[in-house]
Image (cartoon, rainbow, N blue to C red; front, side):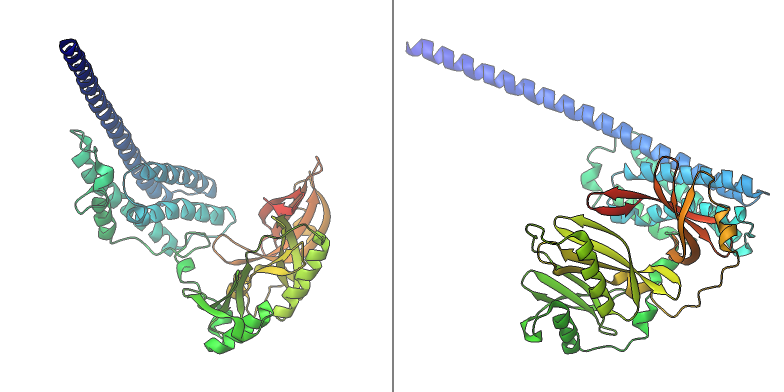
Length: 438
């Protein structure tokens, strides 16, 4: 029996050993397959990235010599597509997001800036010498990036060198470090100032309202916060504040946080995180409560634009009305809990960043001329004067037309009062929680 037991035990151990050897061989084979697939994905992404960068360089060169707005529009569309494809390829490569920041921004600017110039040309404006020089410099930068990436990619394209590169990317000498070095070497990237979301001026934009206000002390700000929350100043604890474009003191009490600007002592932000219970107030009552609250915070006339309810809180968006013009750039959000009618949210950053003394231009085109621009499929229900924000943070004076479509849709259409061009079209989405735009 002992001999038979030993034989069985050895057989069992042998079977386990064979299974382990087989498992190791399988795992090794899967690892090699994974590395091969990884090599293919990375090599293909690098190839796609370089192909699109080469195309960007070519299209930028073409844009310097096109002779008509229609042709410039065609080239701009190709540039926008190539920059989008390049960003998708770049996202597949194994480098940390911070290491790709400069190249990502460059690709975003290329597509957006070309569309900006195309719209400008279609609108009848001339492309300036400075703008043409920016296009030329963007083309040169595209060549530099492409050449640098060709050199980096050559180190990985042959011999399966991509294996383990994800771990290596954060190390000195790794792929990520190579990308970072390439970004640091870009010396001829232009500073683009234009009306678009990737314009460099947005990074340095400041608040005129805050810049012209005197700095307040911590205790003065505490008094403002206490009045905002409705508690004695001594009940507020100090909390982390803010720096950046809207420097602010921070305070806390229970589940509520408050921010008050260091310049001017304006209420910037307030949030109470208690989850509301069963609703006892209607959304209409919440809108009225929010309107009263907003009017007491800042001087001026605030008009609600739309609202939405989520998890028992009705959040109302207000725009400042200056004379007969509704300024959608000067935005305040106020949230009211439907169980208690208490204000539990204030977001005044939009108003504080944008509000200032304005000279709103008198319309060059009358209402009838602007209405003639609209689609014949729309029926105008109401019209008003507005300022709307452009993608680059500028303010566009517009006629706002509330319209109905053939299928019963509700739409807002904005026509520029100075150019009589259609600037924006939004669809109003009616939901159980309120009205949203898209």
